[in-house]
Image (cartoon, rainbow, N blue to C red; front, side, top):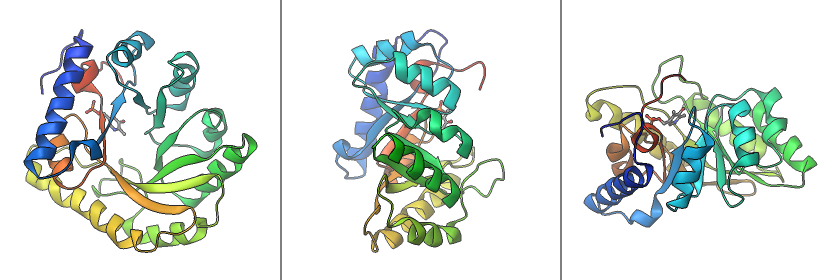
Length: 236
Ligand SMILES: *Cc1c(COP(=O)(O)O)cnc(C)c1O
C-alpha cells in the first residue's frame, strides 16, 4: 500500500478498512472479527483527532513517554493500546488509563501490571508477545515459555490475558511470513483449551501495513497499522 508524508487520513482509513474487509471475506472470515488498531507513533495529536473524527477509536503507541501525553490529550472515548517493547519500571505511568498492553514479554512485567492496575482499581487487557520471527531484536517470550507464564498468572485480579501478539520478520514473500503467524495461532489454540481465571486467550494481534492480508488469512483478530494510515515515519 503506498504511503505519503501528508496523507488524507480519512481516505487512507477507508482504504485500510476496505483492505481488511476484502481480506476477511476472501478467506471466509467475518470482517467484524478483526479490530483495526491505528498506530499513531511519531505522529502528532492532530493526526489522531483526524482519524477519530473519521470514526477510528482504537489507537496504538510503542513508547510509554509518547503514549501518556496522547492518552491525556486525546479523545475521551479513545481506546489505547501499548504495543512496543516494555520496561517494567514504566508500567506505572500508563496504568491509570491504558486499555490494552500487547507487548508483555515475561511474568515479571505481568506482575508489575497487576500491581499497578490494582492501585487504580482497574483491569488491564494484556497480550503475551511471542518471539515468532527468531530474530533477536524482536522481543517476546519463547513459545516454550508461554505455559509457565499462563500458569503463574491465572489468579490475577487486575489483568486479563486476552491473547497473543507477534511480529513477523520483514520478508518480501508473504509465504515466508505465513508460518510465523500460523505458529502464533497454533499456540493460542493449544493454550486456549485451558482458559480459566485471568487466562482468557482469544485474540491474535498480528499483521501490520505490509502483511495485513496474510495475517488475516492466518486468523488475526487485531491488526496494528501505522504507515498505511498516517503516512511514512521519519523516525522511530
Ligand atoms: C510501528 C508498529 C506497527 C505499525 O507498523 P506499520 O508498518 O507502520 O503499519 C505495528 N506494530 C508495532 C509493534 C509497531 O511498533
